Image (tube, rainbow, N blue to C red):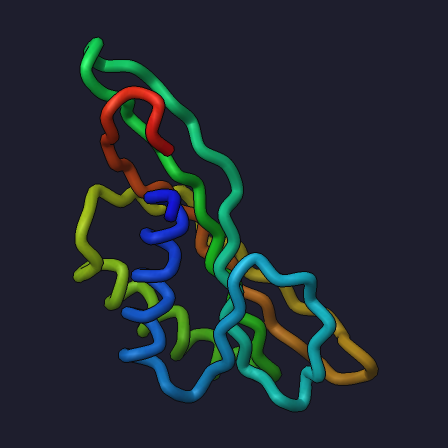
Length: 128
C-alpha cells in the first residue's frame, strides 16, 4: 500500500475513534442525504516531492478535511474535535487554511468547513 494511503487511513481511524457522531468518507464522489449529516470527507489534493539527499525523497502530502453539517454549532464542534485530533496525530503537519461556506442542499441549509493541511514524510527514492 502506498504510504500516502496509509497516512489517510490512519488519520480516518484516529478521527473515527474520537468522533463517533459523523459519517466518514475518503475521496468519495458526494451524493449525500443532508438529513443524515454530519459528514466528514477526507481528500488527498496533491503531493509535492523534493529530494533533500540522494538517499531519500521528501513528500508534502496535501489533504483536505471537509465537514458538512446542517448547523453552524455542529460544524464548529466537529472542527474543534478534528483540530484537537490533528494536534495529537503523529508526523509533521501544517494547517494551511480553514474555509467556511454556507449553502443550501435540497432546500436544507448546510454548513461546510474545510481544513487544508500538509503532512510531511520521507521515503527512500522511488517510493510513494
